[in-house]
Amino acid sequence: RYAEQTEEEKKEFEQFMGEFSNTFSQLEKRGHLTIKQKGLEADDLAAWIVGKRKEFGIDEIWLISSDKDWDLLISDKVSRFSTVTRKETTVHNWDEHYDFEIEDYITFKCLTGDKGDNVPGVPGVGPKRAVQLMEQYGTVFDIYDACPLEGRYKYIQAVNENAEQLLTNVELMDLVTYCEDAIGEENKEVIRNTLGKIL
Image 1: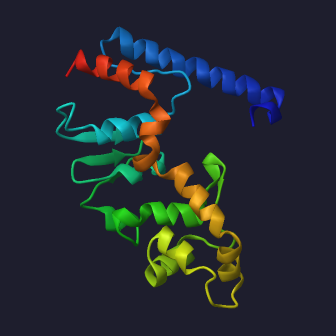
Image 2: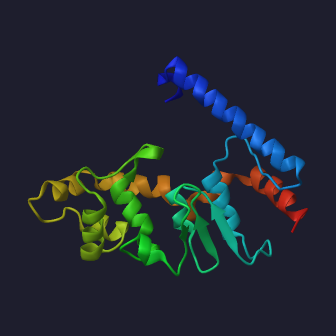
C-alpha cells in the first residue's frame, strides 16, 4: 500500500517513522530494553516471548498496545493495556469486551477478518453473526468441517463460498501457533541473548 500513497501521505509516514525511530533511541539511552529485528513483526515477537514466558523466568506480562490482535495472547499471566482507549483487557474483565471465551477469539477473528492487516473476513459476517456461528457450530475448524452449512441467508452462503479463506485466515492470524515459524531460528537466538542479559 506504500506505493499507493499520495506525496503528502508519504511525507506523513516518513515523519511518523522518524519519530518512531527517535522514540526507540530515547528508550535505549535511558537503559530500557528494545528489540528491533528487520522483517520481524511486533505481534509475532510478543507472541513468541509470551510463549517462552516461563523459560525466561517472567512471571507476568503486560502488553502495551492498541492492537486487538494481541488479545489472542491474553491468559491468567498476560494482559493488555490500550494506549488509545486507556483500558485494560485481562482474564478478569474479558467479558466486558467480548461475548465469547478467550480461546474462541481466533475463530471470531477468522470469521470477521482484519481490515488493518488486509485479512478478509466472510462477507456479511460481523461481530454478532460471528458469535451466532460460533455458538451454533463451534471453532473455525468445526465451522469449516460443517460446510456447506444449511440455510438461505446470504451470510450462510458466504461462509460456504469462503470456507477455504477461513483456513487461510487461521494461518494469517493465529499468533500462538505460527509465531515460531514467523520468528525464525536466527532471530530466536538474538532475542534469547538480548533477554538473557537482563533477566
